[in-house]
Length: 121
Image 1 (cartoon, helix red, strand yellow):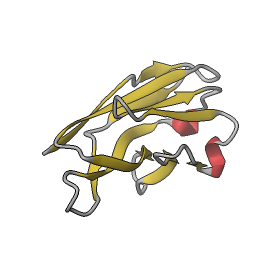
Image 2 (image 1 turned 90 degrees about the vertical axis):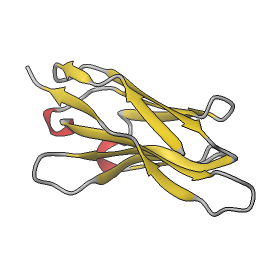
Image 3 (image 1 turned 180 degrees about the vertical axis):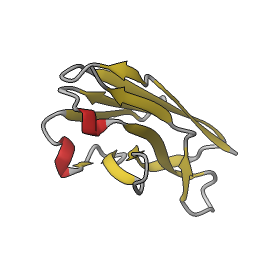
């Protein structure tokens, strides 16, 4: 099995910063993409940012220039630095990882349980 554990959510004022972290553990042979989705109340889950094992990044237009994703391939961790936060960034943030557990298996998409980010004054 594979577990993804997030940390770093909380309450922050508009214009503030937060850093989310996610660690993958368990039976892991390799990881392709890792990243973050978010889901606001009453809305669908949306991609925020992703990063491949080679370091290629992809960001939602709404966070470009404000959020930065990074990853440590040796530790199987992915971080999301969120700056200039806005009330509309309020959501539950979910870590994901595309994991191959053994050399002979396919990549499977795993999710963390989510961490709440609230941007409010």
